[in-house]
Amino acid sequence: MADCDVDAPDLHLVLRPDIKESFNYFGMKKANILIEKCTACGRCKKLCRFDAVNNTNRTYSINKMNCQGCGVCYEFCPSDAIELVENLSGKWFFSETRFGPMVHALLEPAEENSGKLVAAIKEYAKKLGAKEEKQFLLVDGPPGIGCPVIASIAGADLVIIVTEPSVSALHDMLRAADLAQHFHIPTAICINKSDINPEITDEIIKTAEKRKISVIGKVPFNEDFLNAQIAQKCVVEFSPKGPVAAELKKIWQNALKLLS
Image (cartoon, rainbow, N blue to C red; front, side, top):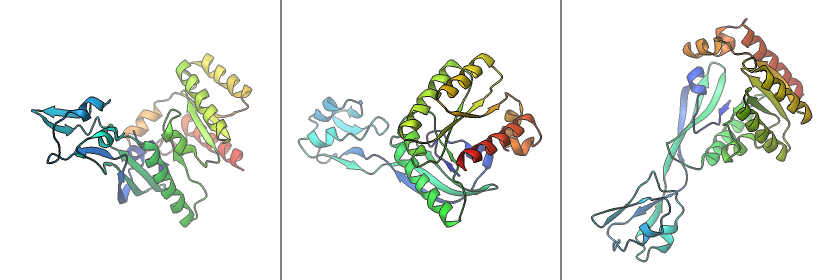
């Protein structure tokens, strides 16, 4: 397994991983002002579009949270008083869980290049799966259509879009489907909380039919989700004979059929 939602990872809340190895992740470099060379001309502050340069009593410094690592200040400093330095942006981990190995990560607040981090942990997970002769690599990807999502679905055999019956979710589902189609990746849809708005659920199904996308399951709204999370268990562990667990097992079987 790989939790590729590195900006907001959550699989660890349920899987309670036992961390075996941890690795530092260095993202985009950040600017750093060399005080001994700085002439306090103020050019860096004038050029910075991210308000990342502080000036306190004519002593200039970089606000690391605001710095985007663009390098403009570095390129135009007349005194060569600015350097770009490695920036520790987060950590990623190899862990064991009761369901098998998992690779996951945590990006620090306001850090960029999450797509690069996703690519790194997914590549590690692929090599680990090949070494241990695993049949599948399950990737939990982030929402949206940006770089982290593209990195998450790259090379996938099947993308399962989890949506819910709301106008905004339908819109997001179509954008995600367009992205998968662009990369020629087979796609399926799972509708979560499918019974809270039957009209939009029907609209999602009809839209999927027009797009020739399989709807592999409809998960009902149920308190088993909340109670399972409180117990730090998966739904199929917490209530193996409940309606949610039954639907999730059906979704898994339908996914296997699409992969066969």
